[in-house]
Image (cartoon, rainbow, N blue to C red; front, top):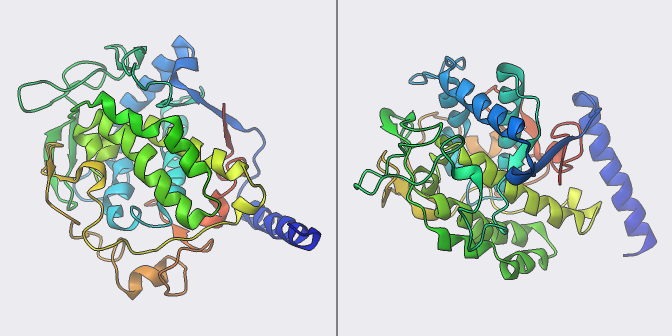
Length: 350
């Protein structure tokens, strides 16, 4: 890179950080995100208890059908499933979504520990060699009676409400484990994604192998591209995926703090079925396809979609693209999410 281009990149990156700082409180202490296995026993228990707190706390968003705060935190993902998968905003949206979950855990449920991720690379071939799936924590696989309901662990018999079209019907947390799926996040696939030098191509690589790996390994509700945040394991999986993206970004800083692209509108029929297609409310895959969007103005494919999201009516994701979090956190632009150490996310992976 020429000296001029390097200086220009540094100045632009600085301007992005300045814009963020002017609209957000500064990051005074970067919060650590670590592998679940590196949490202390007290942190593990406190983390589980914080999620249970959200599951038992009453809803606050005022969304029709929501009963608990757990329903509330699912809602931004459900209502926007058709516009945050198969698009350039896929990784930024989920980075902010993790922060929204963390925000509720800390501000409403008193969690003070480090945030965990599931080290899926380390779990290849030994998925159950961890206490993560023990009864005192997340619990294990679903039953083998055809319902796949999770009946052990701290989230046993967890009642979920949203269906893929945004309607409401009580159903249970399900899992249909496929340990072999973790092979998709092996070193070969990670290296393949890291070798890509532009975001427009790289996000598709991460969305494919490593992203699908964790969803398919747990499956059930986690195999549904719309409803997967109903399983508390979702947040550990997507934290791992976000870690991979951040490591890719750090291979070429500051340039990759500015590197954004990809479509705003997914290919018809490709989303949000996710790794295992849609679901019929039980977490079992179906050929449902892209659901109708119940919000009326989010997740659509018309001009109201592209105009709302700040990309000047185009179908290319830009740094100006707005990320909506259903008022759990304020709207931000993708530019404000690009630096994991910046004031919006204020975190680092270890």
